Length: 265
Image (cartoon, rainbow, N blue to C red; front, side, top):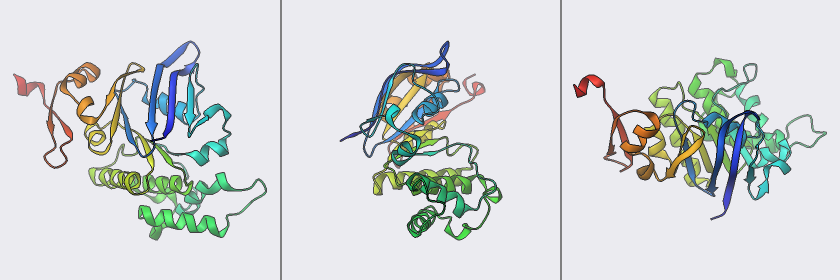
């Protein structure tokens, strides 16, 4: 399998004197679903911003589809990597106009308006995510779950092979969490999209991903399959929390059960 993302010896932060990530290296192969987990302050957001080009690598190397990321201009990067942020912007836009923004990387420098191909692709993506019937609604009139579905539709309109999502299920109820992650997993399986997901919920990370990266204090504490990473010992070492880990009776994936201090008395 070809490597879609290669990150080598990354050190990164918000200033040269205050680095958040230290010597991070990993590979994401084509068609893989990778979840990045870790406690608050572990460096997940910094890693996301480094992957998206918002922060420089100091030092380090990021390769996206066999090309050094420093050699990619914003339009070229957007043709290789689609991003879904935790906070969805676009208050003064309809869903349709918001999704059409995903076609901007393919516009010629002189092109002012979308062409028929752009509308056809946007329509397909809105139907795929189940928001086509609401395409004329404004983004600021949508629920959080609907906004995330619109953001995924816009990312799909970029027609990339790689989808990077930052906490897409935060602040959503379990119904919307499952709807969004089942959609992303379907895209990974049926459309062969490579997925890199940053997420707090360890049970959701375990259930939907092939591979986990667990961060602690700006470094990779461990990585591997959900069964290898989601263990009582690792949770205790990284999160300073005592939990019980058991197999999900349906999927066989590891599942975490927290318990109160009162229970152990």
